[in-house]
Image 1 (cartoon, rainbow, N blue to C red):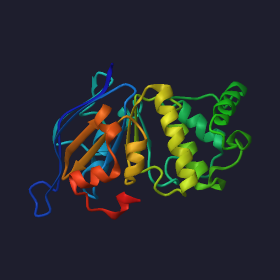
Image 2: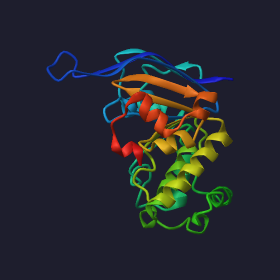
Image 3: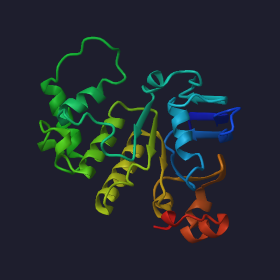
Length: 260
């Protein structure tokens, strides 16, 4: 299998040399192959979001390297890495232009990896493609393409944001608690779509969640982060046999939110 993401000895320190110095990530190494869907769990402050922010280039790292699709991106700024990376955040209000229509948002996302310059308007072929692909979400968005995004429900908007994140076929998909703000029904739908897109496009998918049940139900690999390190990396038969109760007992995770 092809290694889409390689992280070697990654370290991130905030406020280095000050009284508030915090080592957020400590010497993390991780190889992720195409098609792998990793769920990431851990207490608040464990380094989960920091890891995703370092991969995407939001935070510069203090040591180590990040290789995406065989290219060393360690010193590349966020906007240059964006062509390889799709992201979805917890807040459904992020990731879309709220005062633009669904088709306008999709048109922007679809040309993300193309060279800048004058872009043609939305063509009839574009609209047909958007409509066909939106229909696969089974949320009726294909009949609302000229509706402004701000009128959508949280679940519809997050599904659209997820769709926009993968429309340009990134190598890596980073999800930071992207269902936490949704009601259970909408969250289940977005998680179903997440797994479907991950399998369809053979991406490297990394999903932070505080829901341990979801962490074991989705994807094929689970990381537990503690104090800026990867304390556990389970996959294969070990993961198939893992339960929430075993996870809590083994690692003594004291976080009531993770038991929901």
